[in-house]
Image (cartoon, rainbow, N blue to C red; front, top):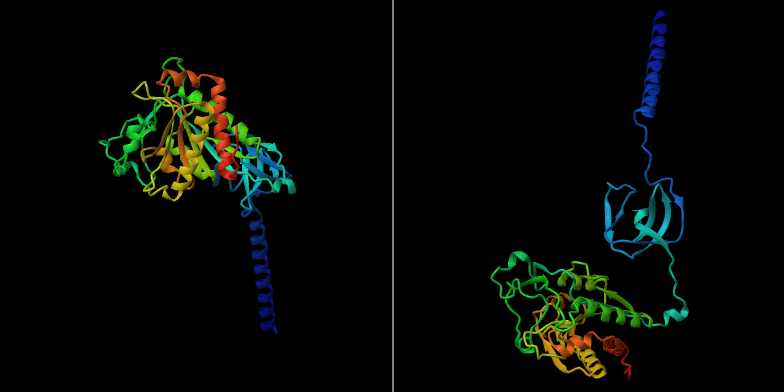
Length: 368
């Protein structure tokens, strides 16, 4: 009997001990393993859209400035908003919930396409008004298949002008050079020999007018720069055109020549042997010829001709679209300089480029 009591007492004590350990461990888990607040929780549900208001806006995977960056966006990108909390905006990007600092976006509205809009044909045009206030002597590869480490400082073009072919004779005889080619990221702006006008002002004025004219017709137009006080290399401008999925690239320049008698308009495209752009040679030729023809006829300027060269960095980097460079006049020539300082002449030039773009896409010949 005593033996049975001892066994029974032992069993009771055993269960009591195990129960205490279970309760103790449960309490420990409640304190020591307390869950941290989920930073993605508690967002106020919102609908609508926001857009980035500056370049280099970081999009995070969590609402934490020290957290993982999903991607970085430029100014003007529309984002689907789903919520907000403590200065953060939750957005849906590529079907993933992400977060952006509320100070870097602003509310916007999206106009959904109607049936009529759907029938409207639009195209994306990239226009590069040449030059900027400051030149940039930093060397950059003249072609996208080159690297800085591949280039020798003894390159024929090293430290030379960036995108200006000084004379048509040089342009006509230009050939693709070896893999050591390098050029300055951005050459100095030409200056009017009589007016003192700067090339970067003239090219932007023409490009901006073309943009406004094309936008009224439903085209999407992107300019490589919105002011003169930027520092954007020639290759970067072309790469921006590629990343924006533009359908054509038009560079507008107003350079200078060592020969003060050189005047008129000239067009440049990459050669049909250029490995980076040869797929668009024919279309580039057609676009360049169209712009030159219309611009010279409308303004009365001399048509110097269309030249093929692989020495223009910007054209070499336009690997996904037809690309042309149009020199609308030479500021080293008194007549061209005077004309480019005349608003009516500038308007005719921009009108001609606009007409050429429309005809290129629609096949519709626009008469004066």
